[in-house]
Amino acid sequence: HKVINYLLDAGVHGIFVNSTTGEGVSLSDSDKKKVLQIIVDKVNGKVPVYASISDTSTKRALWNLKEAEDIGADIVVAHPPYYYPPNSQEELYKYYEQIARTATIPVMLYNIPFTTQAPIGLETIQRLLDFENIIGIKDSSVDFVFLGNLIRLKNIRPDFKIFVGKSHLWTAGILSGADGGLDGISNLIPKQCVQLYNEIKAGSKNVFDLQREINEIWRVYECRSFLGGIKAAMNLLGLCKPITVEPILAASEEEVQKIKQILVERRILSQ
Image (cartoon, rainbow, N blue to C red; front, side, top):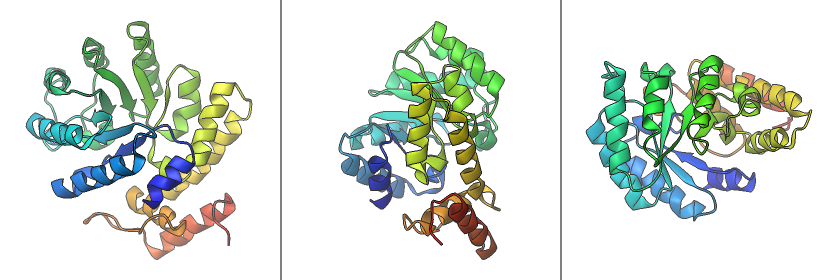
């Protein structure tokens, strides 16, 4: 509840549940369902709730889809299956095709090769534009050339939304035609993230200073586990416990002190 209030008070435009920073794939099915239900109830329509349905197979993703629809999510998000990585782009196309044909609410693609080892090819994304209920993509490829090619797909579907998944690329990506940014750092500094978006849209010259500030704060991730880093930082602000899902390690005491120093230096935390 604290985190949701913190995000809504900062003016975020949406809430993404059970994904990478939320360790969704590590939670039990019942815990994922509980988390989503709490957030849908708490948000109460103030902003769209994006629910991850990513899983190891099409069958499991479709089961997650039904759960998300029943609970009341506004949009579902799916990255490629993991553990058994797709052998071809045709497998990926069929995976998303089945999700799109089954879904009664909008669907968003999620390209994150770092964790899935299965990049969604540009041609596959272009083919999927035929499904009107596939409304966009979160691209965490950290590949600016790929992002630029994604943005060109707006010539085919101007309504197709592109969210930049790496906060370091937000300014460059949105100025180039992407629609927004979506990164775990928004849990820690939502006001700065919303401000950056607003300043970009307003054409402010201040955007590059704001981008550099966010990049510096992002260094809280530089721990043996990036999840341990972000949760330690949020714990220092009193937003959540510094707990990660085992076997992922929480931040060490040395890492916590480094994170605290970053937050103090950036005036997010008082001494």
